[in-house]
Image (tube, rainbow, N blue to C red):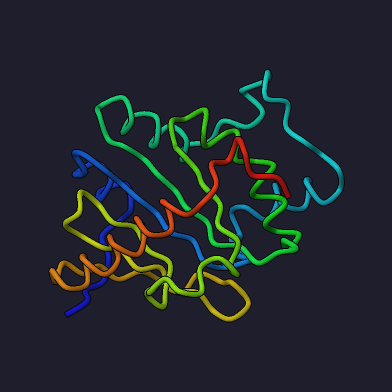
Length: 174
């Protein structure tokens, strides 16, 4: 039975080996991210050589986890041509990569034969799934965690199927 998720930082702090994330939406409406999205739409691009302008607490969490041996992978299933928001994500992915994430992209048309859960998710150490729930407009509605072996297996196998087929960020162009 799904349960309300503990804070993400707590889940990550308890993670020992792997944290994998599958994103399947073409737009997220995160109020904390809104100023960065607005600046990007206005033409601002962070300078990769000026770390102080783009490093965020999220990246600290990722880097700390990677430093203690957690493999961090993110796969994104995207519609093509990509949405404006996906372009924003793509342009900012260098920061996630600098923190230690590995990122891959899979065009939605190449995912049609993969069995996918209905929601974005994280899998921690192949033991626990955190589902993210969003409105149709991309507003965050909350999270649930699930440790039922069949659910963990579904999400883990879906992630690996996407990861195996997806293109590494360095080779994906939009």
